[in-house]
Length: 503
Image 1: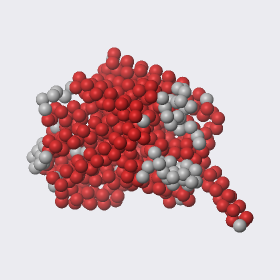
Image 2: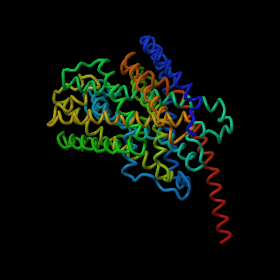
Image 3: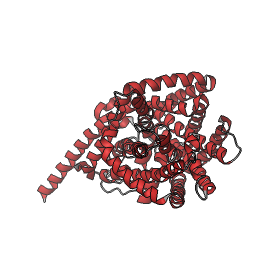
Image 4: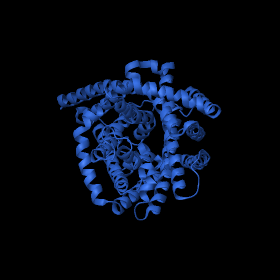
């Protein structure tokens, strides 16, 4: 079961090619990925909006349907983790670094630099900023994760299928998934995971460097970011060596403690009443405008459509590229929960935490900007530290934030090496350490190459390009799951009817 498959060697070769390409010809890599990203965003922005909203609708239907009672496992299976640890692991693996990176930067950018439709710096821009931040980080993002996690958990724990993306498509394609077509599906999933995680690690290294530059005389450069990546690589490989139950569990709980400490300090030391008012007002506006925001393509405004492509489509691609990794990880830690319990937890709890996070840091940044702080003039990776600098104990909050980025960095990379190891050893839940180490080195190398070839823009370009093919696989996964659930429900109904008649 631990045997390395051809998926490992094929994907490793593709990833190594990308690393060499970016090292030898970084400008060429940036140009090519930029052209691919532009073409996909321009011609398929509508497609991303439709399918992601469709995933959310499907999840909501599963919660209220009779299928919600079905257990992700055998009928008598119980969850492996309590709610607190389960939620911590969801939060840490799902979008940890991103929350710290964009917590102040995205709201302040939408408010002061480039609002979706409003005039920047106005109350309307403030309202729009929080609504679209919630859109990008709320139920739509977690709906994408939930789909992949639900499908994998269902087939793995209820039908004892290998923990592979390809195995979830057997209800549609049958034994064809055991051959070359199945390998292709898994290669696409693994490659999307590598790019998605590498992008996030690149963001993390960039922000740690930004924080060091803001607080000290250390320069903001690729060389410093490379050193950060090397240090964190050693740390997360050490964590990977300890195994899932120890390393990731302890780090996830540490992440939650640090995140709660940071948001509590910002809430207390920042504009507390303003944060509460913004949170309450923006939640209502988000719920009221969610349908229109979900389908907004702005066909008659080139400027607005470009904003959607640069932000909403980028985020949908980011979450899709992360979904094989996060989905497999969430599935792994969710055995024994009912579909209804699972989807309710995955969709709602992390979304609400995200809303609280952005309303706290975003409101504090905007309030400081209104007071003349100039946070909008800072580099994206420094916006959070610039916000801290405007409030008491700013240095302490900056230190906590950089520590949190580091632990999120380690958790995400650690989880990803585990998932990539599973996907390239025929779904083994205990992939060999050397396989995990190989993927750890590849992830870090890809993050470094993408930063070297074009910084944050190169990360975004690669992300959207890698996510596109996997989006089609996700649609097939939904169809396959529904087909299997119908058969499963029919069998349960027949069994209950037989028991009733015999009684």
